Image (cartoon, rainbow, N blue to C red):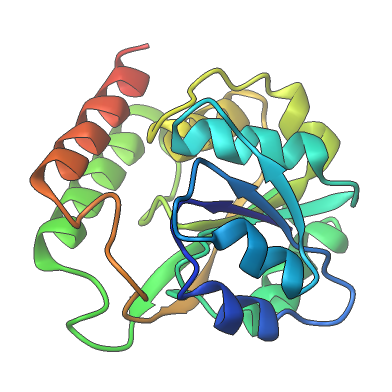
Length: 212
């Protein structure tokens, strides 16, 4: 269970308290200044310090540090309920899918801004058009077998990492499956949609992956 983290001290108590039995959280801390690593340790999580900044860098470091055969990569901002994880892991565990992607179902208009929804939908359409993948959301939670994910040799270390995961998995012949997940208003400020700069960086990184 990999939780990429940057200043999520306010969200981590709820996230980690909701962790189902058998899931071992690895918090991949990407330079937090709010005490997130201490909070995570106090609540029983393994903490990995990731000096290279970037969402993809945190995901990769957490994946390397994880030890379970099946691994979940999920945002640590309390937008997703960890209690959904057994359901999301089931298709990978029973062999009916190689990659499960959470398709967001916002519980309120505050959970997912209109601009972020439109950008996500446009990107998903582009991916469907170019690859034929039946994809509607580059979701903030993904489930796959750890060794297989590492063998994809993903190179993006920024916000293009989720998209590169999907494209590389498709090229490798993986069976992809979307599962609905309730999407809650996040705790704290978003690093992606919380600022114009964050939004523009994400768009740039995604376009770079598509360009490759």
